[in-house]
Each structure stands twice: as structure tokens, then as C-alpha cells.
Image (cartoon, rainbow over all chains, first blue to last red; front, side, top):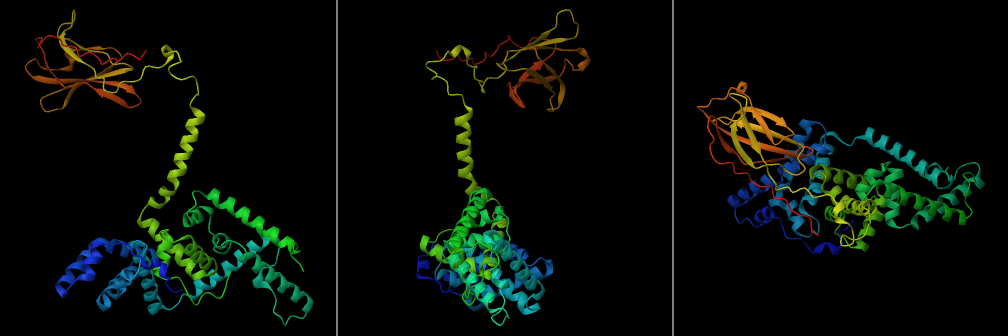
Length: 228
Length: 211
């Protein structure tokens, strides 16, 4: 996604960053880099360890992060000064985690097993959501158009379209709430933390309201049964 | 929930601003719309939030819970505190006298205990609400040479304590005014075998309740 212009107004740079980016010569840059590491090496190491559980691999990733951040006269770090409304530490964690993942993929390739398992879990979660909102069959389980029973296929396609339309009618925040709960299968406590809600009770209360809204929308479209 | 949005993902600055809750409402809705459909960005959102929470322990969560806790405390106070007439109307004689935290036991003198050869009588002034007093005598090195506890405002230092009349000691009285709450007297010299000075009892700072 392209960085929107709204992010242009930047907060003042942390002093370590300001020193680093304004260093005039190699000696000043080295000094500023050391100062930068004094302040942020713990956060970078924490990010590497949180992303890769294996201790040795995490240390390799940490070294990789440092190398990449220093590359091209601190080119990656200069990206922050080019526009950041967020705190530098938040931004740095995101950039570092991406570097760790790049490093892991370059060395070990994508983890197909985990991705396949995650995909299966997401499928199960979608089924749970479909069960909750009116027994509409899961859109991913809808047979292809080549199915023998054309009438049934058409009806299922209509159901799929209706469900997508109803979901699109929700507020983006409510769609995110549904995704976190029924696609990712997160508990209320974690969702509350992610969405800035005070307690898990607020999560479940909102979920109930959204599910009721979905049921109502589907019923107005004449959908209240699982089978077409 | 998959939509054809995986080709474009949230940039670091955008995701960071969303996590820091510094985006405008409109921009926030755009990011939430993307997060709802994009499994990969949502995964990143969750992971980054987890890393930040563990790196900044409890700060975020407490910041959010704080107002809720404060509101709950206010409600409890409103419900639990009896709403009687105002203090000006009430009978103040039935109110508890507040504990005066700066009140300390006043150290008296150590005098030979009548009828008990070799024993000394230690006196101190009472402290309101104190249900127990602890008397400690320290030798020149600061080590506790003798200690006792009593409900009274005096104690007998027996000869069996083994204190020498040639040595100098300090003593102190602690008064217990609540669960694990003690107020201490000042340290006073204790010389056995003679009355070191006229007993000067520090009067407790009693405060009369307002009429």
C-alpha cells in the first residue's frame, strides 16, 4: 500500500537518529552509530528473538538487521525521516521484523508446512463464522461452476455474493473485529489489546452486536437456512 | 476473508502510525479495511503489537485500563460510602478519631524497679490506637541487646537481660497502630545504674476533633 500523504508531518527525530543522519564524516557516523546501538540494540535484539525462536538463528538475524540498517549510508533509517507520524521505536520494530523475515526466507525459504497449517486453521475459522451468522455455507466450500447440479451451484453463488455484500456493509473496524476473532481465532483479551478496547467484555459485546446485524441483513435478503 | 488486496500491503510508517493510534479517523478506517481482508498484514499487525507489548511491559494495557479502573473505583466509592447527613449536621461524637500518623511514643526514663533488685523500669508515653509496644535496647555496635513487647506503656528490664551498668546503650519504643504499621520513638540513651536525666515525656500530639 502506498504511503499516504497524511503521514508527511513527522515527529521530531530521536537525538540518536538526528546525530546519525547528520554525521558529516566517517568518524562522526561511527560515533553516532555507537550511540544509536546503545539506545536501540536491546529493542532490535528483542525483535529478532521474538521473531525467531532459535537463539543462534536470532543472533544471526540480529547481525543481519544491523548490517542492513547501516547499508547505503543508513538508507533504511533515512526512510523514517522521510515521513513518520509514528514513534520511531514502533517503526523500527516493524522494519527490523521485516528484515528478520527476509533473512530467514533467504536462508531457509518459506515455511510451507506452517503456511499450510495456518491456511487450514483459517478455513476452520471461516466455517465457525458462517455457522454463527445464519448457517450460510462457507464461501470457500462452494462448488465450482462445473458442478453437476447447476441450480444448486447458482444458489450457492448467490449466497456467497450476499454474504460478501453484507460483510462489505459493515464498518471496517467491525470487519477487522470479525477477522481477528473468526479468521485468526484470537481470544477476546488479545483482540481487546489489539483494537484498543478496555476489556474482553467490550470485544464480546461488540461481536454479538455485529453478528446480530449480519443475521438481520441476511434475513432481509431471504437467507436464513444453510441449504439453498 | 480474502480479497484481492494482497498485492499491496501496509507500509511500515502507516502500520506504525496505526499501532500508535496517531492516524486520522478516515485514514484509520482505510487501514482497518485493509487489515480485515489482508491475512499477511494482520499477521504482521499482531506480531508487532506482541513485540511492542513485551518490550514495553504493561504500559499500553495499563494506559487503557487506567480510566476503567478509575471509573470503577469512583462507582464503588459512590455505592459503598454511606450517604448520611453532612458532617456539619452529624453527631461528631460518634465518629472515629482519626489516627494521627505523626504521633510517636515519648521516651521516659529508666529507673530502678521498686522491689526488684537489678531490674529497671522503662516508661514511655502512650500512642493513640496503639495496641502493642515493642521495646528495643541497642548496644554500642547497634546490635539489639534486648527486646520485648507489651501492651502496657512500661516494661521491666530484668537482670537476666545481662546488660552491664558500665556500658552505654540506646533504646527505642515502637508503637503498633495498625496491621504491620509501627511508629517509632526517637532513640534515647540508656545508662543503667543511675537516673540519667529528669524524665521528659513527650506528650502525644492529641488533636481534638473539630466541634
